[in-house]
Length: 287
Image (tube, rainbow, N blue to C red; front, side, top):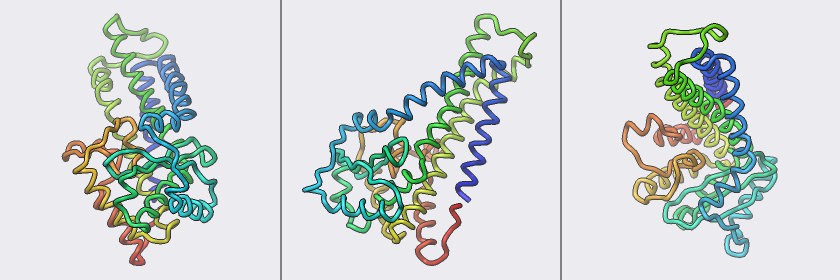
């Protein structure tokens, strides 16, 4: 069901891109913005792992000190049928973790040193399984495609705004439209694209929770880990950037009700409830 929702959201994002592009930028404006967005996101896709790991000062995990993490990861990757990712440690007080990399062959999993101290062995195993599920599901690719469309829509809206300021565009070749509607579209379309992009990210988190629970064979340990990590994230600040928030297993930022609308993560209560359903024999459909 979550895969279907992601597909539907991606379809809506694509349709929105075509509609907004034709309405505001015409065919040429649409293609120009789309090509530029692809160029930017291809670069991000290929080099995002190195950029993110460098951004957070990640160090390669010392096997002699953290051999238990290597062993549990090796066991889980063997079970999942994916290559062993590179493992990294991030210095910091907020317990969190993320996966990055363009595909399973070029993936990395990073954990903060505080998450190793906070969680039990079974809970940490559930967290690692969650991150490996992201890798197996190729979520970085899905996020990059969504970002490409959302970024292109924002660029088209910007192009249309400057075109209106400096005399508009030709209506003969590309079709015109009501200027009031165009102004509304310039404001609403990028906002709608961002909300769809966030919704796709939330659906991928549900998929990774389910996949991680199945991979580890212990949904309750992952549920308990999520509860502890969420509680800690509300109390311990993290020097994170909004652009990378979607990578972490729990949102590194705390926020009120308005922020939840634009959150890259589903409500923690719902994530825990779904895992508890799986544990008690009423597994939810994730396909």
